[in-house]
Length: 360
Image (tube, rainbow, N blue to C red; front, top):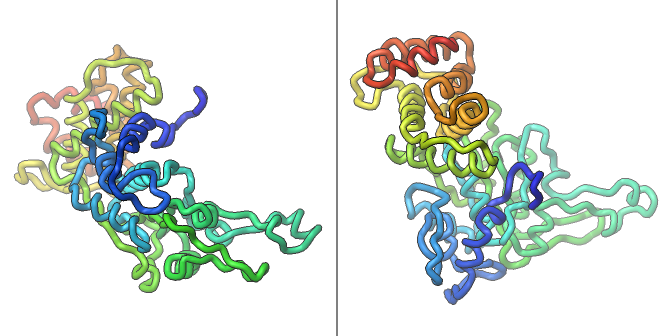
């Protein structure tokens, strides 16, 4: 990593934890894994390494789900992490790859424009024209390199790409081989190879997985945080980690303000107040935990650079409006109703009420 690098990979951020978990890990491990499955679970959920090093929690949630995900990757069956936007699918995927393969960099970002060449392989056309099809002219994708080396490859937002492109994975997942008919060869997967895919079924532009492809994945559904306290804990933790990694100016503790942010997001998202006494209009956006984290980090930057070093209602207001009001008509009505029905009369929320009103 260099000082100019904006975002560090999981294996870089937690390099000391990974070293501590690998050291003296005498438990059985699958071929080409850097540590045992038990150590991988400890890395994701937190705990202590054999030498006493504290391991931070990367995911707050059901332990059984993470154990199932790790156990799946120890077999020849691929893993699909499914859930609503903001349920930490990509974060869990990245950290699993970092712990198991030592690198999370073998990644294919699936989009509507992703084609078969980006999944399977492509060609160096200068060499192809001068020498014809040859191994030297073959340009291997992250998937092909992971197969050769026996490591994990990540496919982010699998349902974003077209169904016909998705189905190019079927042979790889079922036969563990990638045919290259132009050369009359195939790339065979080494032990340790597997696929972690993520997907959600809520956003627009989602393409349904074929039944044949679904059968080749073990699906683990990552739920939204079950309680307000759990979601608040996640947001506070991730805002602190991201703000620190971005070297934002130091600020005072923001736990109280972040708790208000999570409460607002959760109530509008669910269409009711926490005490279930008042029904509310919902927004067109997901208002996910990940979006709450982004608002918290932006409020930190605002408070640090333009405020007095304290995340307050003024620092939150503009960022809340930007996150909630995606549709200028429907979402604005939902937020205005929330302000008048809930925030205005809630103890200790008058400052947030007036701050958001000023922005609207």
